[in-house]
Image (cartoon, rainbow, N blue to C red; front, side, top):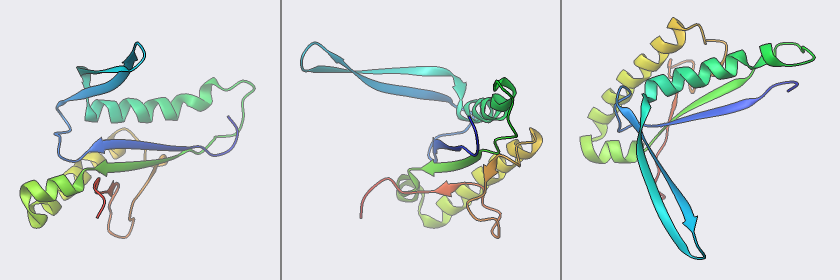
Length: 136
């Protein structure tokens, strides 16, 4: 890998960062039958986030021949903001998003990944993009 790389880490805003991640995928069986497979991961969203950042950060050490630091950009996106607003109301949803933002910033700083993550809004100190999932 040469030059910059872009990575996007998605997580669901209405799920606790410390809860095990539910993994769901569809698999085609036969000609037209699809089966949804669901399982609980052994990792939480927080652990998945840290594992992802660690993997991205360690990539340049495995490059052969060695190249200059690839300086990746990691964008963090919290999905389902609309579901959170619907469940809690806008004011409470904003409070929860602020708490999640603080937790993610703390993880980034504690593990020294500040140079990897692109802030959604540096002036507002918002580390992730909170997005809706429904079309309006």
